[in-house]
Amino acid sequence: MDLSGVGVWSHHLRYGDPGEAADAAAELEELGFRALWFPDAGGPVFDAVTNLLTATREIVVATGILNLWMHEPAGVAAAYASVSATYAGRFLMGIGVSHAVAINTDQEPARYRRPMEAMRAFLDELDQADQPVPTANRVLAALGPKMLDLAAKRARGAHPYLVTPEHTRRARAALGDGPLLLPEQTVILCRDRQEARAIGDGWLRSYLALPNYADNLLRLGYSPEELASVSDRLFDDVIAWGNEEAILRRLDEHLAAGADHVCVQVVTADSNVLPRREWRLLAAALR
Image (cartoon, rainbow, N blue to C red; front, side, top):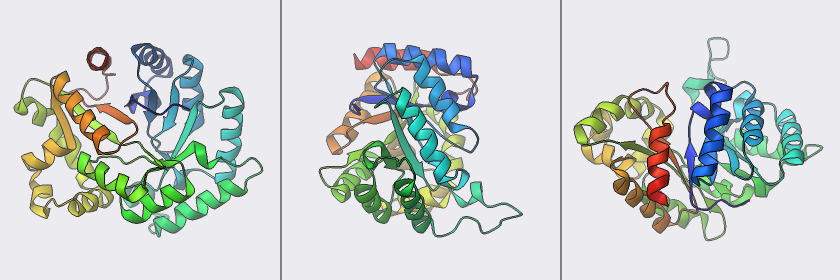
């Protein structure tokens, strides 16, 4: 499983029209991207995995991430075994603990608790399944030191989301030389700052409302005031914006800081439309 270079992270590949997602996946492979990543908010995640694998020939398909609260480990292990038997070496299982606001309900107001223990228990059950999920084919959504340490010990590495090159540098130091480091980088192809802020402000604010991401950025040295106002410094460090060359410079910063692979999430003014034009522009620049 080759996890070098640049991949694409897109919610459209999971939650858009399956036929359109399959067509986009085939094109992304032809364009030269190395992996396809998509999120999980419950439901038949392996249907989406199979849809993308069937539409492509060699590209890696990865969950970014499989939400451990929304799936039974035994079922995940069985589904993993089935997919791997048909598409050997092409599926990477990213696993994450998500956020309390996405998990707690009126019926279970405290379901989300002790996320580190929940992750360890989930990995234990994957290891003890009739057909275990190999450590080499799973990575963990990891931001802080404890989850990064677990990713180094119990998985092939880490898939941090909403991070900066400085976080990549610190994560590489925490992981050491062996484990994979596969950060997500949000990008906006645009003319100027005004356009970038118009497209990205609301998107970023929705993530800053989640404690996991806010706490990680505070650890990196941003102030509570910067998070509350979405300062230009914070915006620029989290979101790479501008022309293709500006985007590539940010990807190079992650790779220089220790990333093995960077998955690019393109944000546009219309989140309902696949950013195929932007993917093509980025692929041409990467070539």
